[in-house]
Length: 107
Image (cartoon, rainbow, N blue to C red; front, side, top):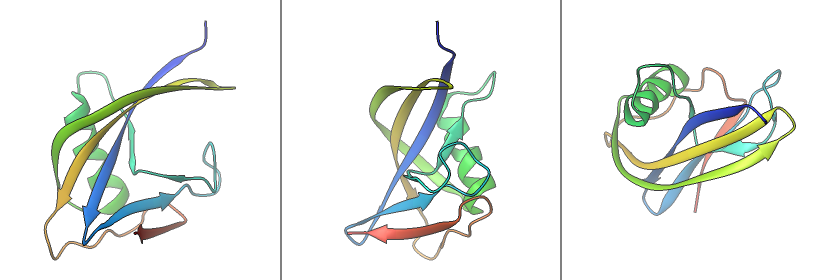
């Protein structure tokens, strides 16, 4: 049975655009675009995990809102179960990349 990896993703919308981040070199799926987020650590709720990951990866405080959907996808390294949530940033907060290669606001 493939390894199950529980992760979260943030759907951040501002001015009719959604924030997307490109995975950095040396990471699994490097160069692919994603909703920022990451693995749920033991003892964390998905919402706690997502807030922590956004602080670590983008240096922003986010408000984690409603759950959107959960999907599963099987990769060669295991099955990723991704739970996505609406997230908001304060109007003056601008993400700063610490792990990603690039980012953009996509209409």
